[in-house]
Image (tube, rainbow, N blue to C red):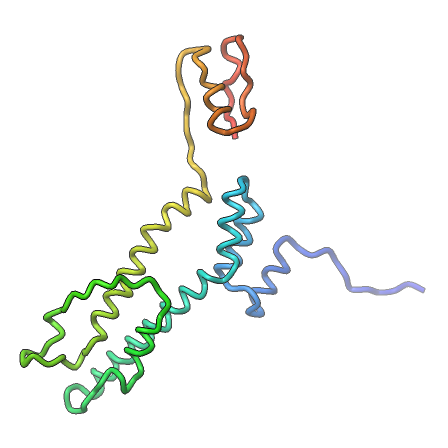
Length: 194
């Protein structure tokens, strides 16, 4: 008997799209999977696998939580001002920010703009230095991201020189494989070599 099965081959990326839509994979993990699929080198694969393990997503989620807590404190200051005795611990902000596993720089710089002129901490308390440290951590992470971009995208290098100067031999040495033809005949390697 003829069966009317409603089946079809999966489209490219369909399972990943479904996993993302159902919250099984985050955007960082989806990008890592795409990087893994197109990786050419073992280092590119290793970087993609590290990105897929969830540490980067956890770092970003920690930053998000810290920013939300800082925003909650700022909104409380706006709403209540100095009329209330607004302590950072009332919101749990300082404890949570101090518990963050992030790589905060421990430069104990006392910001004078946190004081209200009487030697006491102002209504912003310790939240301003914590937010500055979070900003510095993010900037440090973004500055380091350039290395990852280079690893993922690679670099384009042109080795130029007179014929039979050893350019192909140099390329093979750097690549640690026979990437280019080595020949005594001049002009044998003119194409792009990956």
